[in-house]
Image (cartoon, rainbow, N blue to C red; front, side):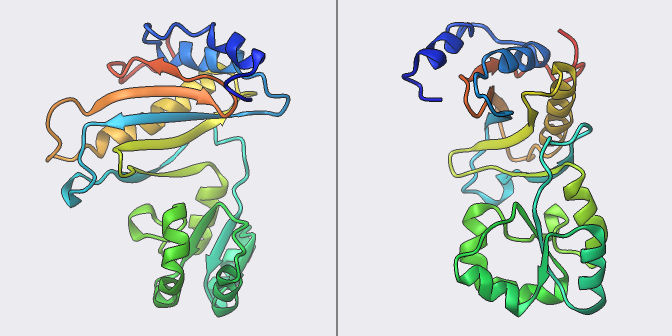
Length: 235
């Protein structure tokens, strides 16, 4: 929805920009301000009080959302032999090694997450410049470089999300769909925020959660009170 459209302006008028909403209020308002005919994705953006240029202030992690994301992620797995068979049995959308790497080098990127067994990482490194900027590079810290590919596939298919602070100290992640009830969205938000708080770098000084916004892909941003760090599903 264009920010200049009549529908967007009408939705934006429902949001008090000077108010800080509770997670439950924000979830309800996000549903109300989504005018997309499709089931819009509900997203969270957080401005953190960190300097991501410093290695000791990098915030990166994963979390299993209790109510999933509302989308079945497409998973690519770099594995061979028995591990490849296990990945396929677990529901991976595409499994391969050199052949998959060549396919990606040719411009194919129709997947939402990538997993690799440790022995494949030297090969996967050849496409790091393709996968890295898109947040698709397998990494041990997010559980996507692992010998247990079946569990990794199941986790991602079940609603596991990855997040990583960008160069501007922002985090972006999905907490569900506009069709979710507001309590489920608030509980997903809470699960993700708990993990973000747990990962606060000791080198981060001052306020850690500077600004939080919830929105749908088609709706206006809704400011959320960053001081609410528990009882997320309460008004």
